[in-house]
Image (tube, rainbow, N blue to C red; front, side):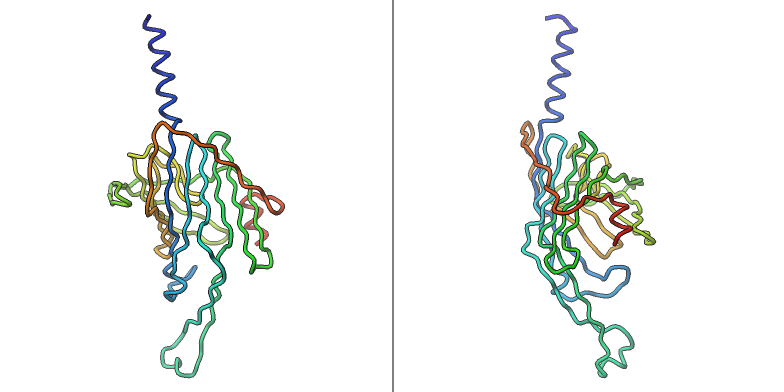
Length: 234
C-alpha cells in the first residue's frame, strides 16, 4: 500500500473518531438569589431543575426532565424593624413544564422550545444561529463531576442588562459545547455560573467514544422568533 493511500485511510479514520462520539449526562440548574438583585431565595425556590443532555455527531439536546410548575414564596424585603408590621414582598417563581435547547453545529442552528401552562404566553419558540460568546481564558482549575476543568469568563447582554458569566470547561472531553445556549470553548463546558446567582452544572456524564445516535430537532409550538425578536417582544 503506497504512502498516499495510507495517509488517506488515516485521515478517514481520524475523521470517524472525531465525529463518532456520544456524550450523555444530567444537568442541574439551581438559583440561590433573585434575578438582578441579592435577594436570598427560600429553600423551596432553590430546588434545582433537572435536565437530560445528549450530544452526538455535532448535534446536542438539553431536555427538561423535572416535573416543574409554579413556586410561590413570600419573602420580606426592607427594614428589619418593620418586619413585624407585615410589610412583605411576594415573589412568584414560574418554572417551565417543558424546555428544550437544541444545537446543530453542522448547520449552525440553535433552537429553544419552552412551554409553561401558568404563563399568558405559555409557548416560546426560538430559531437562530448558535450564540457566540467572547470568552477570556483564565489559569484556574476545578474538578467537576470527576473531570479537571479550566475557567473562562464572558459577559451576556440581555436587553439593558449586562450579566457576568463564568464557565468551567474540560479539555479532556473534545466537544465544544455546554448546557443551555453556551458553547465555544476548547472543551466541554461542565459548569456555568451566572452572576453567582445561578449555577448550571453537570452532575453526571458518560462519554461513548466511537458511537453515534440520531437527535431530532424539537417541533415548534408557536411562531419561531430570533433571539433578538424574542427579547424585544418580552
